[in-house]
Amino acid sequence: MSTFMANAGNITRKWYILDAEGKPLGRVAAQAAVLLRGKHKPTFTPNADCGDHVIIINAGKAVLTGRKLEQKKLQWHTGWIGGLKEVKYSKLMAEEPEKAMTIAIEGMLPHNTLGRAAAKRLRVYKGAEHNNAAQKPEVYNV
Image 1 (cartoon, rainbow, N blue to C red):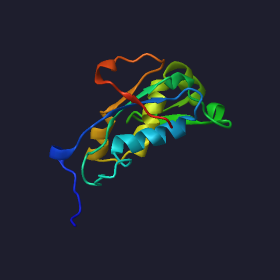
Image 2 (cartoon, rainbow, N blue to C red; image 1 turned 180 degrees about the horizontal axis):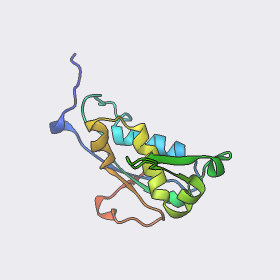
Image 3 (spheres, rainbow, N blue to C red; image 1 turned 180 degrees about the vertical axis):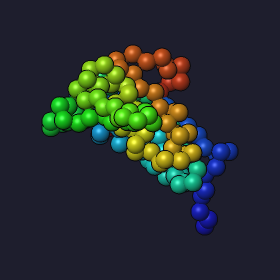
Image 4 (cartoon, rainbow, N blue to C red; image 1 turned 135 degrees about the vertical axis):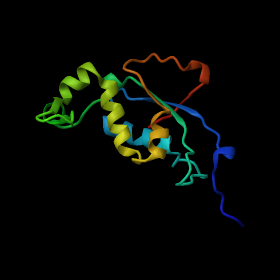
Protein backbone atom coordinates (compact mmCIF):
# COMPACT_ATOMS: atom_id res chain seq x y z
CA MET A 1 0.00 0.00 0.00
CA SER A 2 1.39 3.40 -0.96
CA THR A 3 0.59 6.90 0.20
CA PHE A 4 -1.40 9.05 -2.21
CA MET A 5 0.22 12.38 -3.03
CA ALA A 6 -1.92 14.92 -4.87
CA ASN A 7 -0.42 16.98 -7.67
CA ALA A 8 -1.70 19.26 -10.41
CA GLY A 9 -2.52 16.32 -12.68
CA ASN A 10 -4.91 14.45 -10.41
CA ILE A 11 -6.79 17.24 -8.61
CA THR A 12 -10.50 17.72 -9.29
CA ARG A 13 -12.05 20.97 -8.10
CA LYS A 14 -15.70 21.43 -7.18
CA TRP A 15 -17.70 24.61 -6.58
CA TYR A 16 -19.46 25.19 -3.27
CA ILE A 17 -21.89 27.85 -2.05
CA LEU A 18 -21.87 28.93 1.59
CA ASP A 19 -24.81 30.99 2.83
CA ALA A 20 -23.70 33.38 5.60
CA GLU A 21 -27.16 34.67 6.48
CA GLY A 22 -27.62 34.73 10.25
CA LYS A 23 -24.39 32.82 10.91
CA PRO A 24 -21.30 34.12 12.75
CA LEU A 25 -18.73 35.60 10.40
CA GLY A 26 -15.87 33.57 11.89
CA ARG A 27 -17.68 30.24 11.58
CA VAL A 28 -18.41 30.80 7.91
CA ALA A 29 -14.84 32.02 7.33
CA ALA A 30 -13.36 28.94 9.02
CA GLN A 31 -15.46 26.57 6.90
CA ALA A 32 -14.56 28.48 3.74
CA ALA A 33 -10.85 28.26 4.61
CA VAL A 34 -11.15 24.49 5.04
CA LEU A 35 -12.84 24.14 1.63
CA LEU A 36 -10.37 26.47 -0.11
CA ARG A 37 -7.43 24.55 1.33
CA GLY A 38 -8.92 21.11 0.52
CA LYS A 39 -8.71 19.74 4.07
CA HIS A 40 -12.18 18.21 3.77
CA LYS A 41 -10.95 15.76 1.14
CA PRO A 42 -9.45 12.36 1.94
CA THR A 43 -6.78 13.10 -0.67
CA PHE A 44 -5.52 16.24 1.10
CA THR A 45 -1.82 16.86 0.59
CA PRO A 46 -0.29 19.71 2.63
CA ASN A 47 2.22 20.77 -0.02
CA ALA A 48 -0.24 20.72 -2.95
CA ASP A 49 -3.00 23.12 -3.92
CA CYS A 50 -5.93 20.70 -3.84
CA GLY A 51 -8.77 22.95 -2.62
CA ASP A 52 -12.11 23.81 -4.16
CA HIS A 53 -13.83 27.00 -5.30
CA VAL A 54 -16.04 28.74 -2.72
CA ILE A 55 -18.87 31.23 -3.28
CA ILE A 56 -20.15 33.03 -0.20
CA ILE A 57 -23.55 34.68 -0.52
CA ASN A 58 -25.36 36.98 1.92
CA ALA A 59 -22.12 38.25 3.45
CA GLY A 60 -23.96 41.40 4.46
CA LYS A 61 -26.27 39.34 6.68
CA ALA A 62 -23.47 37.61 8.62
CA VAL A 63 -23.43 38.44 12.31
CA LEU A 64 -20.70 39.29 14.78
CA THR A 65 -21.34 37.89 18.25
CA GLY A 66 -20.94 39.72 21.52
CA ARG A 67 -19.88 43.37 21.33
CA LYS A 68 -17.49 42.86 18.39
CA LEU A 69 -19.56 45.10 16.13
CA GLU A 70 -18.82 48.12 18.35
CA GLN A 71 -15.41 47.17 19.79
CA LYS A 72 -13.51 45.33 17.03
CA LYS A 73 -11.47 47.43 14.60
CA LEU A 74 -9.67 46.70 11.36
CA GLN A 75 -6.25 48.33 11.45
CA TRP A 76 -3.65 48.73 8.71
CA HIS A 77 -0.67 50.94 8.04
CA THR A 78 -0.08 52.85 4.83
CA GLY A 79 3.70 52.82 5.17
CA TRP A 80 3.88 56.58 5.69
CA ILE A 81 4.69 58.28 8.97
CA GLY A 82 1.54 58.49 11.07
CA GLY A 83 -0.25 56.31 8.53
CA LEU A 84 -2.08 53.97 10.93
CA LYS A 85 -5.65 53.65 9.70
CA GLU A 86 -8.54 51.97 11.44
CA VAL A 87 -12.23 51.38 10.85
CA LYS A 88 -14.81 49.85 13.20
CA TYR A 89 -16.51 46.66 12.13
CA SER A 90 -19.91 48.32 12.48
CA LYS A 91 -19.00 50.65 9.61
CA LEU A 92 -17.16 47.91 7.68
CA MET A 93 -20.08 45.49 7.85
CA ALA A 94 -22.52 48.21 6.81
CA GLU A 95 -20.48 49.42 3.82
CA GLU A 96 -18.20 46.55 2.70
CA PRO A 97 -19.19 43.19 4.23
CA GLU A 98 -17.38 41.39 1.39
CA LYS A 99 -14.09 42.91 2.55
CA ALA A 100 -14.68 41.86 6.16
CA MET A 101 -15.38 38.27 5.11
CA THR A 102 -12.42 38.17 2.73
CA ILE A 103 -10.01 39.49 5.37
CA ALA A 104 -11.24 36.90 7.88
CA ILE A 105 -10.79 34.03 5.41
CA GLU A 106 -7.38 35.14 4.13
CA GLY A 107 -6.14 35.33 7.71
CA MET A 108 -7.01 31.64 8.13
CA LEU A 109 -5.15 30.54 4.99
CA PRO A 110 -1.40 29.89 4.94
CA HIS A 111 0.67 32.99 4.25
CA ASN A 112 2.57 31.60 1.26
CA THR A 113 1.99 30.75 -2.40
CA LEU A 114 -0.55 28.05 -1.53
CA GLY A 115 -2.63 30.53 0.45
CA ARG A 116 -2.51 33.14 -2.29
CA ALA A 117 -3.62 30.57 -4.86
CA ALA A 118 -6.47 29.45 -2.60
CA ALA A 119 -7.61 33.06 -2.05
CA LYS A 120 -8.05 33.48 -5.81
CA ARG A 121 -10.73 30.75 -5.74
CA LEU A 122 -12.89 32.72 -3.28
CA ARG A 123 -15.89 34.79 -4.38
CA VAL A 124 -17.85 36.81 -1.84
CA TYR A 125 -21.18 38.51 -2.57
CA LYS A 126 -23.12 40.91 -0.35
CA GLY A 127 -26.53 39.64 -1.40
CA ALA A 128 -28.08 36.35 -2.46
CA GLU A 129 -27.35 36.74 -6.19
CA HIS A 130 -24.10 35.54 -7.74
CA ASN A 131 -22.88 35.24 -11.31
CA ASN A 132 -21.33 31.77 -11.09
CA ALA A 133 -24.37 29.67 -12.00
CA ALA A 134 -22.62 28.28 -15.08
CA GLN A 135 -20.19 26.39 -12.83
CA LYS A 136 -23.11 24.49 -11.20
CA PRO A 137 -22.08 25.05 -7.58
CA GLU A 138 -23.35 22.80 -4.79
CA VAL A 139 -24.82 24.20 -1.57
CA TYR A 140 -22.54 23.31 1.34
CA ASN A 141 -24.25 23.25 4.73
CA VAL A 142 -22.13 24.70 7.52
